[in-house]
Image 1 (tube, helix red, strand yellow):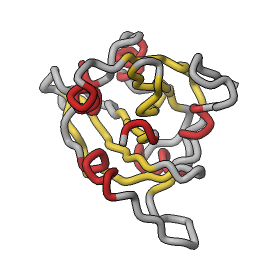
Image 2 (cartoon, helix red, strand yellow):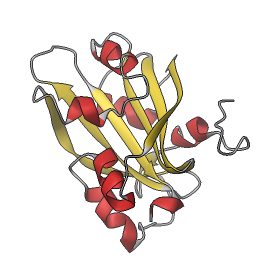
Image 3 (cartoon, helix red, strand yellow):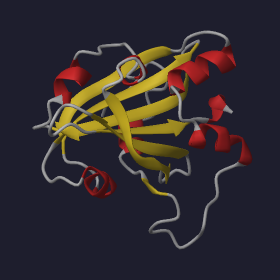
Image 4 (cartoon, one colour):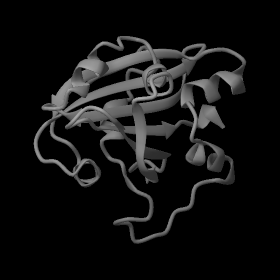
Length: 176
């Protein structure tokens, strides 16, 4: 179990792996709270938006980088079979987690190198500063098994074949 310095009883990585598209596969329709709409529809950098709200840059805590099986929802979005390289992080202010994020790419993708090279820098530094990175498709609202809302977005490098990053971000209560 991967733990964080914030709460040793929480396995953030396992929580993120429970993500499903909002209202898919559940018998009850769940709607995000109204204060989540801004975050669900944000098209700019999540890191920058958190920095603006809290008037300082959030810290990036890397929970882990592993090769693993993708979830069924990730398989559908990536449209590829096989293992993925997954990077799990928390965005925090004063050691308080505000956003959990999971980024996955097929292990055969050239994007693995870009993810490994980030260390504790936010992924937004790469995606929003290099014009070769482009969003593919729309934002997809997600929900975790514990009721936390989030979203996913697919990115690719326009000049690189087999490029594709699926970025999933989940909004913890402290963000609101």
